[in-house]
Length: 386
Ligand code: COA
Image (cartoon, rainbow, N blue to C red; front, side):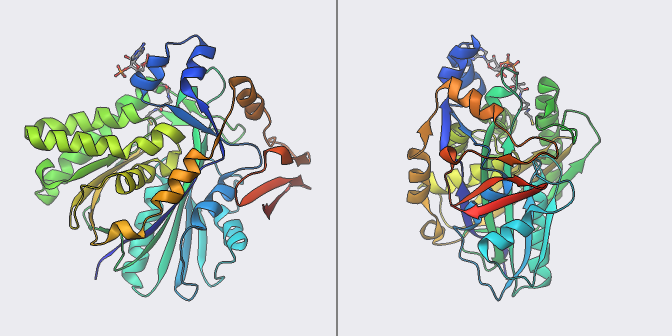
């Protein structure tokens, strides 16, 4: 029996900005954003979208067996309640089976991987069951901050089952954790605090550490991998990590890994950072845009969550995987989005649900997507199908 990812869903809000325009507005060279950082566009979430609405929209793409679903786990670092799990609201919005464990998991951008590994272990213990993993986030650093170019919004949903149809996960994870302050978000604010340069150094140090240990532990080398996917806070970050692994590969394999890496970053280049979902957005981009991968190909995945946890693991592609993807729907999701001018983006950025007890109404003019947050009444968030 294999265990792994059977289906993948994606959602990103209907609005984006062009990062060349953002660079101009901030007085930066556009090449810094598109080449130096490696981002072309950035998804913008209106206040009617949050981790619940986006997570529900991504999970709506999956065909879930109500009799078999036993676990719903949401990984997020931009949750909307310090106590209650977003998984419960998503469960209600999607009308999912109530005979489940439903919870939210947190460790910065590592939360999606934590959820995936919990789901894998759950299905290993209960092979008839299915587990729904949702990685959903809105990355906000603030207007005109160093991190602004690495913002984004979106969600990836994964159904984990036995005998999966996309990616069979190997039981080969190597994980490493250490208490560092490279990125965090105090509970009283909605923008992250980041020691930008330090966080990039730590990301690379964690990658080197777990990748070295992984090779020692499994006996595998870079030659055993058809592709490597990375957590993508911005796509240049993943490229820097890939470059650490490349020298051990021969010339032909280096070219293959670089070409496939390029396919794995295309969705991120257009959506931006979705924190917990970024690694899985990269995997989805690779699977949907690459037509050179064969069944049995081994894909390596590096997950990093500031604070910090790093994990390297792998999976092998299942025969026929391409027929279970939603490639055309996702092309449409991205192509149908509306471009915002920078002043309009700045207005939307400022229009946020306050961190306070007052009632709040989101603007119906910006409603889009299958689910919306209409506002907050008596300190309770109000959601509805759109
Ligand atoms: N043309 C092409 N490239 C250019 C350029 C230009 N005109 N100007 C600058 N660059 C390159 C730089 O050389 C650099 O490339 P390198 O990293 O390969 O050396 C890159 O663009 C970024 O420039 P830099 O000056 O380092 O950017 P910055 O000081 O604005 O900071 C981050 C970048 C990522 C640190 C910042 O966006 C941030 O804090 N992000 C949030 C934290 C984060 O994402 N951390 C990741 C780990 S989780």
